[in-house]
Image (cartoon, rainbow, N blue to C red; front, side, top):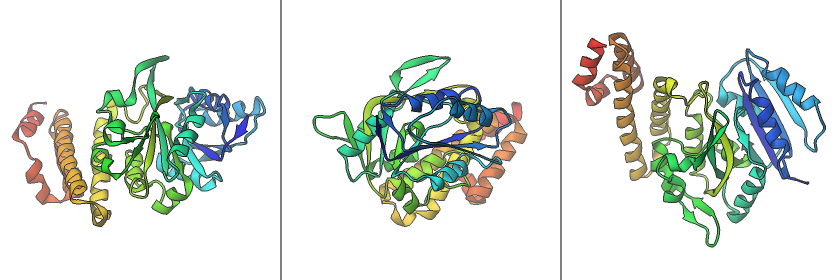
Length: 321
């Protein structure tokens, strides 16, 4: 079995039901990682113990390092692991997801197809209550990888350049567990922004895509587990919109000198769309929630911005909710 130059990074929080399956999916890879780094981010369950027990149950051709820290969020947890990693590439695996046995082989081949790429990622399927979806991630959206990519002739790989930035402003369509990034490029752009607990992957990728191309494989390499505790679950919609707006405002303020007119317009359009969706959700929960939403937007964008997003129907809905 060949050893790759890939460090696998697993941030784990209250994942004692899933972490063993995630680790086992690495153990079945046809291509071994150089190392696996698990960081328990202050779990209140037995995540650390389950991971440690799994490691102690057998030998393997790669080391598994397990760390424990107080809760700091997924961005800080990933960064901790990346700073301890030694591989040329960083492959992300969330503790509740599962890799197909050819996952690493496929990402390495994708990177070989585009030698100058700074990241490679593959397709995947949802895993719900033990059932794997027939549809790929992209099928749930607008097939962005193929819509914005350029097919590598006579292959199932696509190169993705910065023309995808306007689409990425609308939301990240690259699941972290399907992603492998060049470690040196990650350090050059500054790793994950630890002030974001949601949408941190989108913000990093918006910086990374300006550093170099990505390459996408149409082959399904990941099973993304969908359950009630997912950060992206619908019950977290208000919080996710808030962090999404924070990311967009951060992008607009900090990289505007490097954004084209089209990319900036896309950022502004998404801010406008997201603020309206945010106030709609807030208004459904009554006047107090509506006022909290107004306060959040005023703090983030300034009082003057409120006029552009005010809708009488939102206020009316809040009054009767």
